[in-house]
Length: 413
Image 1 (cartoon, rainbow, N blue to C red):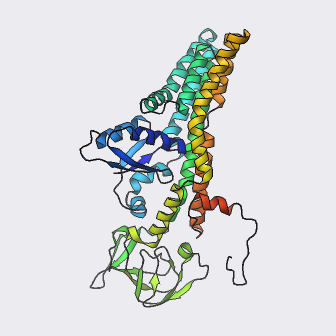
Image 2 (tube, rainbow, N blue to C red; image 1 turned 180 degrees about the vertical axis):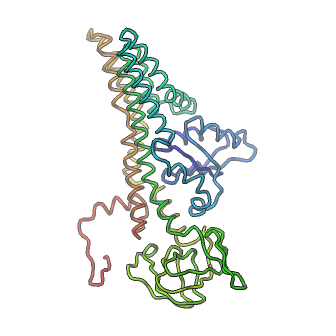
Image 3 (cartoon, helix red, strand yellow; image 1 turned 120 degrees about the vertical axis):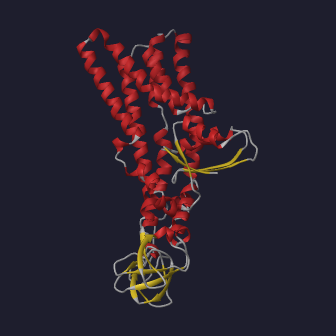
């Protein structure tokens, strides 16, 4: 079974979904790709778990889910552009998290204004604003706890905010909810930018092609609908719409988007052409040899996706670190709250405040996000410039290179 998942902002999101799915009977081989937002899993025949249960579970965790058609990346992006490109095309304030930040900002601003007008009721106004603002996070924390993720970032933040309310620091709690929402929004923006490279690659292939029929007639068709042995017309200035061979005409083609070759290559009848190449000066008739799901650009995208899915050593360390970090922080905070008052006669309210302050500043999401986002961005930028890097491990190795040598022809050694 294949799905498209929306709302994965960092690698910890993958852990939350995997933990929930692995607890469901009959579900196995769960594979999540953060860069492409895809989920693949096996569901045993006759298992008590149904497809609707899987979708319901993922939605309860705060993620969007839609069925994947099973087509490869180029067709998935181009054909389903209305569904899959729409979230990325939105401005930040048009997204769900953007609307949440704007709404919380208005709510907190209104609470502050009301507290100035009615000082005696200020704390209660802020308390109401905090409860409304923290509710989505607390609900998500509860859903995560039910599916096995007991120590999530949402749990950490919800406990800290509710604790701040208990000790009478409603204004500070409101600020924490608002700042946490802004942090979530920034993570979402960073993740979308990391995935933008894949979408840029897919844009190398034109959306339409000029199909020639047996009588020589011409009609515009979607490039993704082309079949093997179809005949297409490529005019000067057009991008080649499919991998194929020239059956009529001669021209120079700019293959740099595909091969990285900086000088246009002269091609004539019988020569092969690549999808995404730019026709410079002649009119060509090209016989299609590969469909959109199997052309050169699609294979490059597939290789980049596989590279982004493979974890670099640093990413593996961060992911393992984050699993132990949150429960450790909560345990330390509990010790800070309990031990000094019991053993050293400390003031309960003072140490409760300090323990809650530790919880507020200890969220590791930015740490967990940084490595996979940086690697995804690096691989995608390299692919756009004709450099295919097979995984984060290779990218980290390149970062350790001190000397680069070229020979007189410009070949990299």
